[in-house]
Amino acid sequence: MLVIGFPSGAFQANCYLVALGAGGQCVIVDPGEGAVPAIREALHEHRLTPAGVLATHGHLDHIWSAAEVADAHGVAVWIHRADRRLLADPFAGIGPELAQVFGDSVPSAEPERVAEFDEAPVELAGLRVEVDHCPGHTPGSVLFRLVTPEGGRLVLTGDTLFAGGVGRTDLPGGDQAALELSLRTRILPLDDETVVLPGHGPSSTIGRERAGNPFLMGARAG
Image (cartoon, rainbow, N blue to C red; front, side, top):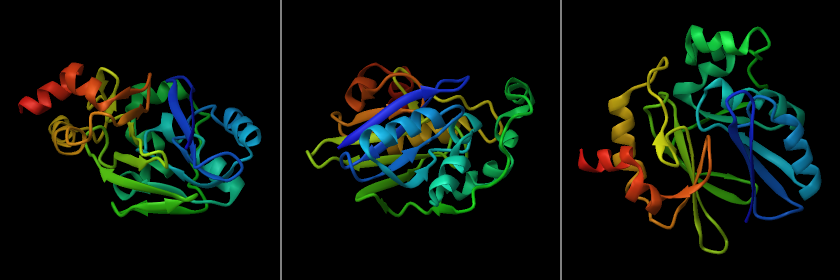
């Protein structure tokens, strides 16, 4: 499996391109602010064609370029229904203080095509992407789980889980109790060998986080 990841934008949100291999279709996960040039370069270098754009949640630093990328390639943006409104009203998810950071250049038009997750697997680009609803950071936060052809396991966690931390819950729609429940019921049951590809920061594994992430340790105790 081919996974290309890079941070972009003021908040260095991770964008990922996932494909079975070079020369085929791919999915693009969380194309944030300033991600378009790097996406174009990766598509060209690996001869990839986007089959869809997947959003782990609706915060602006993760969906900034979603409409631009999706519309350019004639594909849909996939997002959980609880966060869909943020595609058209991105400031609703971040509050006035963070809105000032982004200024007036924020895109506010919905993509031409939008599809909503319903927790059924999404099959795109030859990939079977399992979708788990994990409210807490936002009402519509989700995880994407994949099994590689080689037998490995990946989970793209967005801002639900980071290496050594978790996403904040003090923004509009955040819910600390819901996040703790999501960690306990969605994250902790995953295999230790599962590779974690988070929305910010470096990759990790579930085993490493289970052993050292204080938020996961707290959720397990709870």
